[in-house]
Length: 445
Image: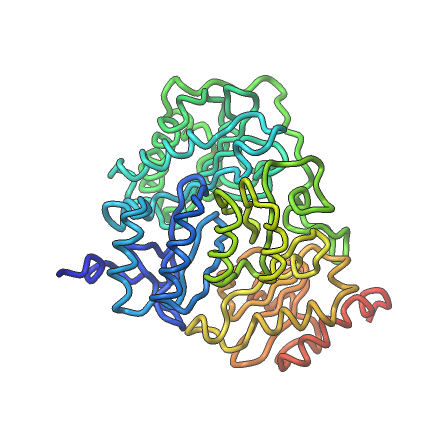
């Protein structure tokens, strides 16, 4: 039998998929794009079994609401692919798979505070993107977002094309960024979302080709030519925004260093919620869990929703769901300091990493409690690329050749933000230095 993925590209440094597996330090990484982030419990159990049988038993939750199976061996690619195809998670080819980067409100249909249930809209958009070959030339990280608002809003998630509900029938269409920063285009009706999205994708491809240095993301195109030229490429299905339109959202900008503390999404986990949803939220350090954990959680609910916040939502949970989650090390409170930490796979999980990033991050959680209570995020990166969090964090540790450089309000590898005496530190010294940062800041050291 011919291996269906034998001749598929092995992606490195872009966006892996089932048909475009990425070879990393612990084997092949397969990203499973789950439409609308809705994973039936039976599918979750079967995916967990695949990860245990053919991989290393580890699963990562991506920031785009997808599952990533790790450590898949060469001879496991075919059976895993065929099993996922049988569940409906495999596209016709790698190009149609790669364009299906649609982020959906994970609380859709569960949140009474939401303006609309966007699941059907997202499913339609996902299918249309895969079918339209004209869009298969989009850059690998080009993404789409559909948000119905409410408790589990996606205001802080940055993407290329946004559809944010303004009422039960219309979306605000904006380009390149978070809700607060994206450039607004206008309004569209629910039934026009897929058409508008595809028109914007084609406009991006055509307009970027005319520039001497074609941008790879929508924000770059907007910066180069503005929104008027892009808007002209749309059909009449988009209408102008009301005069003086303003969007009020929860503050999303990073505070100054050691400013007010806030976990990734404080409204969902117990103790930080402003309302309630019909489900149980469980988070995981660095977005990693075992296949055994996924299987156990699937046995304690009817459906699992994948969020971009290193968390899962258990839909219709059983009475013992929280006990099950606690037994597998899940984070059940918004006050858990591990939520303030992000880390990439590091040595062992990535062939570029030179430090055990997870061990370093967990050591910071144990030793730097006062600091974590006052910052929004500490990021531990295995190299200067910052795959797990390429943006600015309050404190960033960047590994190189087994040591760390520590910087404040910096991206990974940002040498201009390194502090005197905070470069070339051993993992133990880096943890100690981070633990002392709050004292140093308050004393002006």
